[in-house]
Image (cartoon, rainbow, N blue to C red):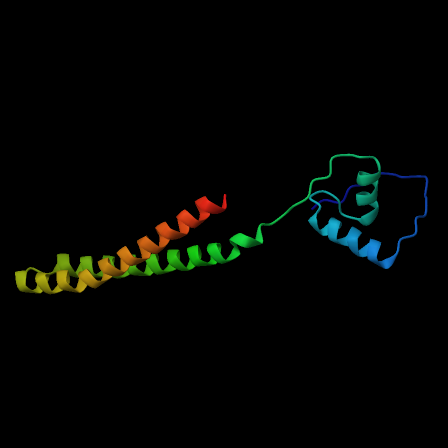
Length: 128
């Protein structure tokens, strides 16, 4: 982020208690534009619009589960693509039947993962 260079020729001193400084530091961390406590105090003092970044921590577990499901579905998809590749390389119908039987468990796992994905999406709809 680029530092702002604004000249403030008049200096005023303000004293804070340690708890007030902690509150200001927390606000500074959440602030989208302020880089220093002085800048933050100026924003609050002159009642400019103060933009704060917030994060909804209740969605953390859901997002982790969605990421794991995405990874598992990708791995299952890779397995299905490999089996399909070998299936198309075989000319013998008996060997093709073997590869079709190999694919069935992967499709069942995919269906289970897709059902889990649908339930997670329903949870997200309830939360919002």
